[in-house]
Amino acid sequence: MLRIAHKTTFGLRFLTTERKSVSVVGSGPSGFYTVCRLLAKAQIPLDVTLWEKLPVPFGLSRYGVAPDHPEVKNCEDTFSRCAEEFAHGTGKGHSFRFVGNVDVGRDVKLKKLLETQDAVVLSYGCSGDHKLGIPGENTTAGVFTSREIVNWYNGHPEYSGVKDKLSSFDWSKVRRVGIIGNGNVALDITRVLLSNQIKDIWTHTDINPEALKALNEAPVENVKLIARRDFSHSKFTNKEFRELWELERFGIRGTISPEFFKASQFDMKNAERVFKRRVEMVSEYMLPFDQRTKKNYKKHRPPSTIPSRTWEMDYLKTPLTINGNSEGKLESLTLCRNILTQDNKLEQRKSDTLNYDLDLLITSLGYGSSALEEFDALQIGFATNRIANTNGYVLDTNGVIVRGLFAAGWIRRGSSGVIASTMSDAFEVADAVIAELESGSLPKNKDVDLSRINYTTWDDWEKIDKEERSRGQLQGKPRVKFLSTHEMLQFLRK
Ligand SMILES: Cc1cc2nc3c(=O)[nH]c(=O)nc-3n(C[C@H](O)[C@H](O)[C@H](O)COP(=O)(O)OP(=O)(O)OC[C@H]3O[C@@H](n4cnc5c(N)ncnc54)[C@H](O)[C@@H]3O)c2cc1C
Ligand SMILES: NC(=O)c1ccc[n+]([C@@H]2O[C@H](COP(=O)([O-])OP(=O)(O)OC[C@H]3O[C@@H](n4cnc5c(N)ncnc54)[C@H](OP(=O)(O)O)[C@@H]3O)[C@@H](O)[C@H]2O)c1
Image (cartoon, rainbow, N blue to C red; front, top):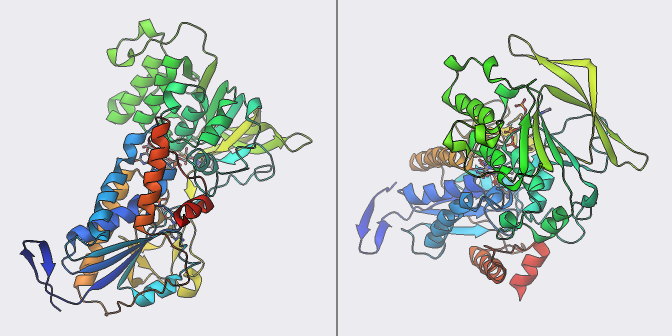
């Protein structure tokens, strides 16, 4: 096999005719970083197809990252530059195409991809929920998962649009909110709920306008973030935690009961820097503004009025039942107290219970993932919340590597990690793909028949993107998103 490339005045050109085909399934950060790395590093000419279930790309960068964190979405510019270079045929002898609105497993079979492509990378993320599995969770009105809330306020086509269940929920009665879990998603949602009426924060974002209108109605007074373990096992990161404290400038106050936080209770000498910083943060922010000892925590003087909106970190509790009224609407949550044993095991004290009256309950337990339906027939292994794999090489149900099949991102590792860690993960997998292709896998390189499928292309995405941005420009926002697949396809048909 020829693997020689030489530079011409037009860039890198390959002397081999033996092109290889790679399909990447899912166009979130892991799929896109995999594509960009493949196209940047491969020394054999590649035809790369990026498949996406939605008509538009970018996964959780577009539909997960909070609208008031636009800088996090800068990765989309990197992805677009890469796609434009290769989709329009100028890119180093490789080709790239985006195929949106195609659910792999349903519209195009994975089996077909495995038969026709030299390599397939599964990077379809986690688009399910974890459940508490307690009475009332699935039947009580006013109980939502973090994914439902986040998808809704970000305008995800499957969760927004006319008459969606969250826009029609009665937000005008929401004063007391409980969130189970204290990861960064729980913090994002707390910030959104408590600052819902602060125009400075939301007016110039791409938040779903329908969601913002509904959220504006909510007179939220208190959000309790309820964790099963203790302060030292909090899942959030310091930057996001600080952002919550900083809402004090708008009169939104945070608190942690001394029952759960006493700086003197921690072994600070042996603690890691991150934890020391976290303890310092709480100790300082809990002090009245003028008594704080470090400048770092005195950036914005809070208003002198008594805060009407508060959040609190609540620890060592496990939800037992969700209680509704006679109409099935949420009334309260029953929990039990927990203790952490010396060897760090959680023990529930089921007889030591308490009740929180709530108007809205959100479970924020991380995102769940699932196997594609074909996995059974293809004997592809699926472990808890991720595809069975070793270093990104997918394993079959006997633990043997399936040649030519890889997994990257959240579907490889479960729903944890930020975009930067997803990038390193994707690069590692792309390098493994290149190594396998260069080692001379069986030639396949047949195309997948798309003639009966109504799919979107990169050019289509560019049209949608342009339209969303120009709608946004009129309102001083980065973009106003299309809220349904139907609307997007209608627009493209014009
Ligand atoms: C609410 C939330 C906020 C976050 N905020 C931040 C943040 O501020 N900063 C940060 O660094 N990280 C943040 N993260 C983490 C970050 O979003 C993830 O690290 C990253 O998106 C994971 O990328 P992924 O490509 O593996 O999955 P995803 O981004 O979920 O992408 C998966 C893609 O696959 C598509 N897909 C699914 N099934 C199929 C199928 N059958 N066929 C074709 N396509 C399919 C999906 O539509 C989706 O586009 C956040 C995560 C969440 C949940
Ligand atoms: N700004 C950002 O950088 C940003 C924003 C959002 C998300 N992200 C990233 O995205 C990833 C996912 O975030 P996430 O918040 O969805 O998940 P997460 O960080 O895994 O947090 C999940 C939370 O749910 C709790 N939990 C899980 N199962 C439970 C159960 N059965 N009962 C009670 N509590 C339960 C966990 O408690 P235990 O700890 O006890 O298991 C934890 O507090 C993280 O890596 C996060 O950092 C980053």
